[in-house]
Image (cartoon, rainbow, N blue to C red; front, side, top):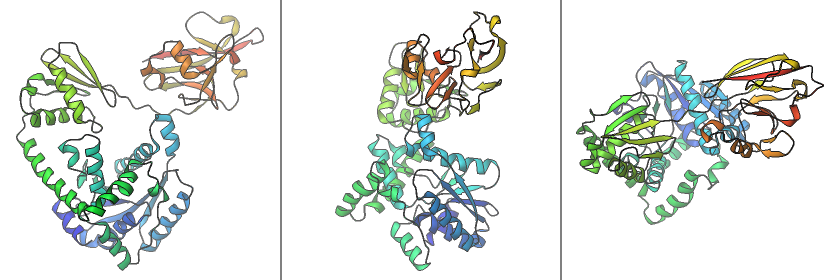
Amino acid sequence: MEKIIDFIKKNNLIKPGQVVGVGVSGGIDSMCLLHFLNANKELLDIDVVAIHINHGIREESEEEARFVMQKCREMGVRVYKFSIDSPKIAKEKHISVETAAREGRYGVFEALVKKDIVDKIALAHHQSDQAETILMHIFRGSGLAGARGMEPVRDKIYIRPMLPVSKAEIADYASRNSIEYVDDTSNTDNSYARNYVRNVVMKDILKKWPNAVEAINNFALAVCDDDDYIKSIIDSNALIVDDKIVQMPCSYFNGSSAIYSRIVFKTLSLIGAKKDIERKHIEMIKELAQAENGKKIKLPFDITVSKEYDFLTFVNNYVEKPTLNKAFKLDEFDAVGYGKICIKRVRTVNMKNDGALYFDSKKVPKDARWRYREDGDVFEKFGGGTKKLKSFLIDKKVPVRVRDYIPVLASGNEVYVIAGVEVSEKVKVDQDSPTCFKLIVEKE
């Protein structure tokens, strides 16, 4: 573990006087990193705090949180505790729970940095984590950029002081310093890609090649040297950059793939696409550069690339869906990506055929709230007949790109109002309704 100090200094991971927040799960890796940095804070001239995040996935999470809090008190380390609802985030964004947990975790980290509570976030990734990451990148079709593995520092915020440390060294440090830790039961769930690589793939590899972890890490270091040199001789000054749009001359593809592939990666990074771009996508872009004017392709995360005469135009169309959870009342609120929602009370006799939606507020359940659509939502159309909300929106020819941004008034999975689209049979205005609510959408 002592090699961590040299690694920190060599890579300039921490500056004197900084506050370092250590992501602490309670497992052996993060507990050892917290203990080591806290034990060496005077040598490094830093302050150390712990950051514990309950991802809301496992029943034992609360118990682990209490364990971390207790151990931090014993070490005299200030701890910041947070909770996120990963399953809910996954459902709302239609992503895996694993991805939702990661997004929520990094959202907490970024907030702490923006509020100047911490200067750096220290993560407990070590040699085995690095080897697993490199294999996963290779399996997904990455080139040298993925074979580099995790960098010692990312975005000038996230640091990985334990990258040169083996799992055996961590276990030895924990034993010598009587460091207690908890075992994360989810680490045995091989449905997670990382766990499958760790518990199945790497386990078999190490039976045949015991030094595989060290060898893969050395391979990554060699890749970094080669990749950095090639990048240093690339001239990308011909790129035309404008916020989320970048134009790349097609002439770049006349050269070596070692050159144009890196320029493509740089182009994509300039518009915010930093992952899930594979070799097959680079080949698709190359073919587009040779295609006729006006052709277009789609890449992951709503990136489009268009052939426009002598240029390829890269556009990031992705807009992260915001959260919405508002009580039902007379109100005005903004629905990002859709428009302003205005709700007024009017007399029923004043209803007009003006494109607004009219509904009887007294028929709306008291617990109804404005939110975005969720899996399982249903809607009773005019005249009767219940349909899945997704099917109803398809029938109404609502574009796919818009559906996730339409506010709906719902109780449970029963939707009563689809802003700007329709109201349910269950809340329609009738002769017994002297007044009603009028909903207007001022589109963005």
